Image (cartoon, rainbow, N blue to C red; front, side, top):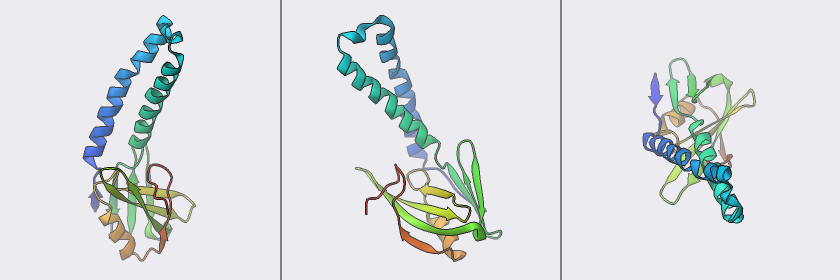
Length: 159
């Protein structure tokens, strides 16, 4: 059984940023309690949106795939999230697509694994250390490659 570990640096960065924004979030709450926001309402509203949306994004990315376990002899892939997991045998997989996520710093490869039940499982190097073992599993079991497809944010590649 192989285990694909998380991209530990991205995980540490997201947890640190989330902690920082939880601390910063006290600023608008203090302004609301004292009523000081009335003087600079526009700046307050923009700040509140930024302070609220970015931590929500960070929390959402923490809920994505954390690690993957592959059992080649059983033909099974087990995708672990923070609060749940998805298990699929090779005969449960309809096909897979490649997807990409480009940042200013790095290019991340990803996969969309479509199950026959209709579920789509996303794995990406943004969250995982590497997706090579997952690709090898899909190729070994002759799972059909269906091309390149846009995924939902943040693993998006514009075609």
